[in-house]
Amino acid sequence: SPRTRSRHIVRAGSRLPGQFKRSKMPEDDAPATEDEELNTPEEKEAWLRAHGVEIESAEDRRKKAEAAAAATHPLEHVEGVTRRVKYVRIPADDSEPFEQLEVILAHDAAGDQLPDILRPRFIGGGAINEKMAREQAIRQLGENGAALTGAALENASAQGSTETFALVRPSSTNGNTGVYLYLDEVGMLKGLAPNSRAVGLARDCGFDGVQFYGDMFVGRVQAEPSPMRNVDFAVADISVGSEWLRAAAAENYRYNQSMSELQAAMKDKGGMTTIGFGEGSGDGEMPKGEGDGYRWSQTDDEVEVVVDAGEGTKAKDVWAMFRPDHVKVVVNGETKFEVGGDKPPGLFRKVRPDDCTWTIEKGKVVVTLQKTDEQLWHDLVAVP
Image 1: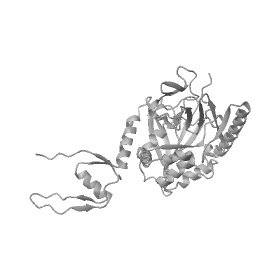
Image 2: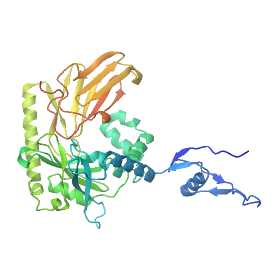
Image 3: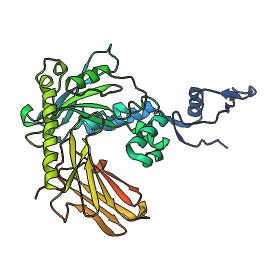
Image 4: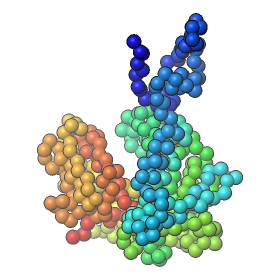
């Protein structure tokens, strides 16, 4: 009877048996030869492909993600329906010139679209250094960081992840426009090459001591009139003579000063404490606070809410719901936290529901809300 083949999918680079052998198939009536050892990953993958096993490489995943992005963002410009937006690539290789790029967005596309558009660019690119990643996680998260797994790191690399770095934020003094760097969130852990030109650009904006790795991208957003949207950023805008760059360092200094004044005022009123921006983001501070059974804090692109759930709470006991201006956490049928919905007003600013997550940590439900932009939240709840 005809022989059938099982269909499996194996990620390229997955661990295969060390003494992997293939049996040479006889040609016509020729006798079979002795088994031949397969020592390299390439030989093993070739043997698996030849025997009906699909191998999914980082390049395969990148192409799939690009295809998905292309389906989301149309490739053909239609006047009045779509619009073209320019942005720039800064290669890590100093010998390569800046590259002018363009994306076509829906005419009414709101918020910064570049993090999602660029995510496929950051798929693969190198194996993550697990030891370095775990050490960094422990520094940031304490003992919870020790639970970081190799599978989680592999997933971060396989899916691609975009981090944003504000070179200058929108304000009334700069026409409400912001300029941002977009980078591979785990570029350093992948061992990507340093990007000296991106470091120099950040330094010109007043950020000393930051380091970037791998290819970077630069884009611009217009925050007002609302809603925020992407607008053109050209290669010529990186010139030291550009108006935005000449003013960036002063803009960032004023921003940090205003943040310090805001925090001082909040402390005088009570009920609000502060949290630092985080490594590489300047010396300013950001508002955070607490309420009945929860506390919240924020970074440039996320808001974290820690909800008291009770000792012994497990993931199966928790249900969470996310909407642009509404979040709800239920534990064992009891609502432990809710903002928005039947309890107006909603969140201080809108979030991206598809990117919001929650985890369980020692009797706490830790909710991470993904901001739609890097605007500062002065409170967790909107002003009624």
